[in-house]
Image 1 (cartoon, rainbow, N blue to C red):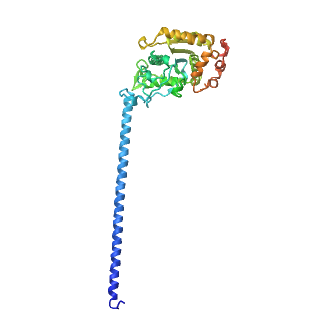
Image 2 (image 1 turned 45 degrees about the vertical axis):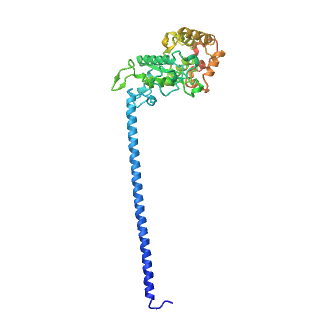
Image 3 (image 1 turned 135 degrees about the horizontal axis):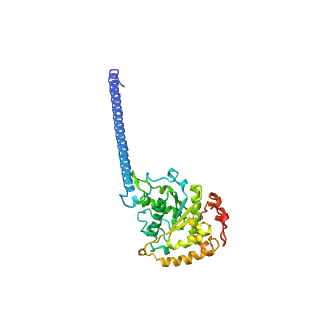
Length: 357
């Protein structure tokens, strides 16, 4: 039992213990608060450093990309990545200043293959840039394609009232839905063929030629007859009227097929039809004699008996094989004046009264 004299001492000890406990608690809270502030400050600094670093990296990448892109447009860089960039901010817009509406002359370049590479700087020499069938390999096809594209651009540069059409559909099942017409256009972009000497002088760093603004693709043709007929309709789709003149660019050994068979089948006047035949050099493996014989046997003879390519088995099979994605041309809707011609399937030539020219 605690005496009355010792009671004050006990109470003082209790107060001292309680005061010590409160002091320790306060110290713990103060330390915890200080640590929290330190952690907060460190986290803030880390976040700031991350943001600054990211902006610096993005800025350098943008600057580097812009610099590389500018160099690429001047043809001063190389490598696969650079070759993937085809079109820049200075590219000519299609129908710039409404030049297309003035066109009267259709220049058609017939397609023979589709691109399978993003590196197209050497598309005029490297077979690996193209999807080639066995019979096309080792015979200078890349050289021929490049020569045809160049000639089409050259002819279009000489006539400001022309429309250049690269024609050819999605003909290869292995490549996916890539068409011949657009492939040729991409090669012209990647190799800067629009700006080559003779295709218009340069003023203030830009080509004065309007060829790119007057160039399009026809994306449904599966054979030479369709190259011609569909390109006429494509011309009408973008200009609003049919051409008055036609020039076709392809191999020399196909001249008779286009001039005497296809043009005649659509009742196109011979006086308004020109043909430019270009072959690769023999050093590429191209054999004009063998090619001419293959042309006569596999193409000319079938079209002589089947001018519209819709009766003979060999021509029907070719069209089916070259349309693996089952594309349906829209031309009966967009060119209603050609509807009878587009549907004509006879061994007899369509009457001139049934075509719009």
